[in-house]
Image (cartoon, rainbow, N blue to C red):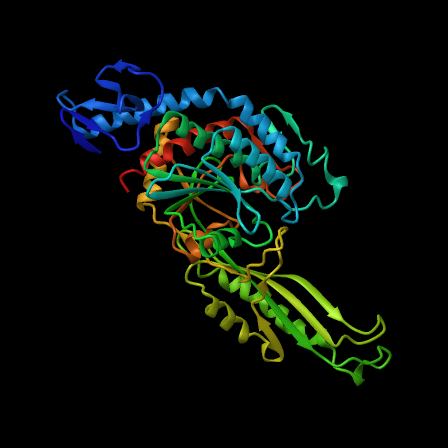
Length: 459
């Protein structure tokens, strides 16, 4: 905020319609001219009125919120239909080209200042050119269909029934895209958030958490100051989740004919004591939880053997591990725990690298370790999120955490960029044949996404 004569002007709040829009109580909408041409319309609050500075700020925020709600209400049905439209476009296996095209076309239609793809093929939409950057993160790829016979309806056509939108990606996580881009378009139309650069970031995440954000910062040179992630949070403010590490463990043996197994050295048998140790380690991890994120976990997710035929002793056994960690469980802690398990000295234990090309052919190698992260309840970004929620929905905000992992493993876990989660739907529907989201929550989230930059002004 700054004072101008007898008026107090809130940064970033303005309008570009009409010469004198209204005088509501003690809030006046006034036009600024530059060389005889309409420049922009600003909100001014008279400081001579008998209100404290905080009361005047609240009044201005409420006035802006009224305008936002009125504008977004015009697009409720359009947001719901647009979500159904993009659910109908397959985007599994990181093939987000066609769905990115549809989203990009909609952002152009809505008047975004810039719409483009990055080198990886993620879709970016920008509004504003302010000094600080707020990024809206929505992953628009999905898992595969798996067994189509298990779906009660076409996973891409889905259905809209009793206020629920069903379909592959409806809840995980295309649901956040329509409210994000319509919120941003509303901010531009109303002249709000003028001090911000706002990015929509429709990205690929399912194959490698955080890789898109990592490449955006390190390859594209765009580093946001704050990130809001649209993964499902049941419309609560999420402020953390456990991290994970993928680990490959390989045992070598000596092959021979299965009719005389004693002539060889069965690699699978070497692995069995180690696997039993993994099961015991999982039980031990339950005894050292993080106060907020809970306990870590470990499990075997894949076992493969190699032999020259089905009647030969395997000369190699590879197992794959999924290790969920809280912040105190670093890569070194995780690997050291494995190295003392039975027969670990006989194995090669490595954290693999993800270096698969995207659909554009872009390669951005990263180690497959995804750190845990959390923001404190009293962190300014969490508090701004809670204030935004309470202002938008007139009820107390709840904070919580995800069970699964998100792109925040990079934003906050690796890069230290403050991130919170806020999105429609419940995370337990993700990766199921009942993938779904309440339509009402989709449109309600747009209010939060639009008002968040205003509540971040003082941070």
